[in-house]
Length: 158
Image (cartoon, rainbow, N blue to C red):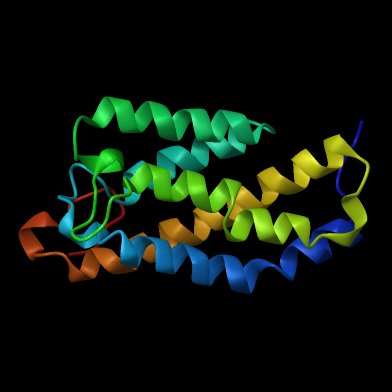
């Protein structure tokens, strides 16, 4: 069975700073606080994280995002397009994973060349970290929503 070594995990840890920044930038530029909490919020990111934790396949995560975009309806939730932009929220996540900081972090891992399985395992780890950082920042951004639109998810404090 193939698994990431301690050295691989250390290399992944070195990417966390840039992943945090990328997650925060994505959510800020997507103007998620303008999307009603019932359409997109912390719970939608938690659902995506659950999918990422259940699989070793990055393609499954991307498929789930696309599904959520189609399910949300035109310009709602994952399909929301920020004012002054032409990108849907879900497309922003897909782009970040496929071509953005997650992809750059994966390319920067020196010890993965030639082993497709190790590369895939490292990629899903990076995706999980990125989504976790996005989820935490989303929780912070909820404070910027109007009080009536903050949501009342379990674990929230009034």
